[in-house]
Amino acid sequence: MLHMRILLFLSVFALLLFHAACGTKAPVKEEISKTETVRWADRLYDVVQVHPRKQRILMDWKNEETENPTAFRDIASYESHLIEKGYTPLMITNAGIFMEDSTPLGLYVEEGKVLRETNRVKEAYGNFYMQPNGVFYLSDKSAEVIPTEAYDPAKHQFDYATQSGPMLVIDGEINSNFRENSENEKLRSGVGVDLSGNVFFVISQGPVNFYEFATLFREKFSCPNALYLDGVISRMYCPSLEREQKGGNFGALIAVVEE
Image (cartoon, rainbow, N blue to C red):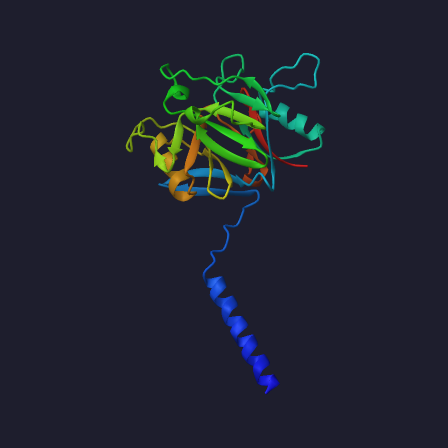
């Protein structure tokens, strides 16, 4: 009799566990340094996917360890700096639109310090000013992309941030300024963040228009918000993708590193 009761108890317990498991959705897996080349709408893109809780993401503008700090400018100089500091660079790319002297055109935050204030100009020439533009930021091992208008310096404290534009995807919607069949096709780079906090750094292998680029983030990678970083001058160094681009003439740079 005791044996039967034990078997009955175990059966009921197992059944309860089964129903509990069926009623609970499995958490979305966080990808760590996933790199791939994807084809989307007959165009090729190189993608670096990381999670800031698992991999360190840095932004740097100038070499502050020199007597007269100057901008790194190119990827090779920044790579050498990172290696000297004990990092292994997994990916390096340019961090947004800048002026001729390498100064970021909009908000730029590095190690919690605001080095450039928010640019809230809305009517001027260039992609940066196509509205809405936005901010990609890192804070307490999390990342997000937000429209510039949503940034409140009194409330937001960032570890790193870069302002660029235009926003590609805003709250799940493609920027209404984009035309699906636009002939304005150029090499483009951008960044998006999905609902699990995964960050997607993407650069096209050839010319694409804004609309196609935005659909990649929204539909392929399920990013509710994504931001354009830059165009034809964009470069990416990523050995696992066999991208060895180390040149360029940039402002700030973004790196994914192992310590």
